[in-house]
Length: 208
Image (cartoon, rainbow, N blue to C red; front, side):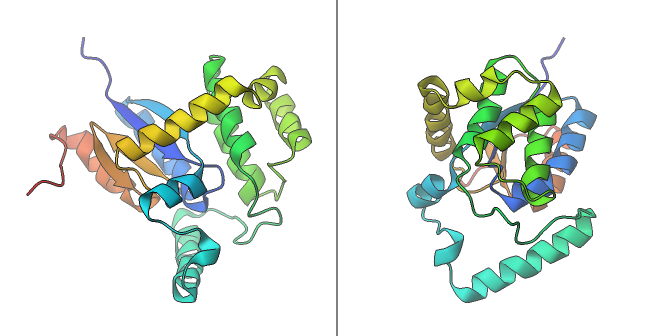
């Protein structure tokens, strides 16, 4: 029996694009029966190491275009969310690391990922606040120990390792989906990833 293919999902709860892409991505991988490895990363560090700029340092034209694109994709995806949430930007490390801790504990991370995205982008909750995160865990029936682990050195080490693995994989933004070494950057590349999975083709590379 052939083992299922694996897609590596690099993202941050801080990213509106990862939020927009998550539901269609999850639907697609379930349809194809592929395995997903969720690897949260710290975006400011990823940007700094790969030549990107945080939003506040981008040219105003890029910032204006980003807002227009968010409106387009909000309409396209039918996803009701706040373009400027009350608690954004925020420090995303603890929320990202809670996902890593849940995975390490053998917990399916999908409900937690969905709930954290909803907390930031739809419910305007402060996902940098440990008390708010504890509330989310309790709501999902997940032990508070997950947050304790998330704040510890072992999960911090995995978070840093995710960063290194992302850079080694040529990932530079969120969300990025990696299939057999081929990077699909952005939630607007999900259809291309779907095509690659449907065709079973060999991965494309940057070589001519």
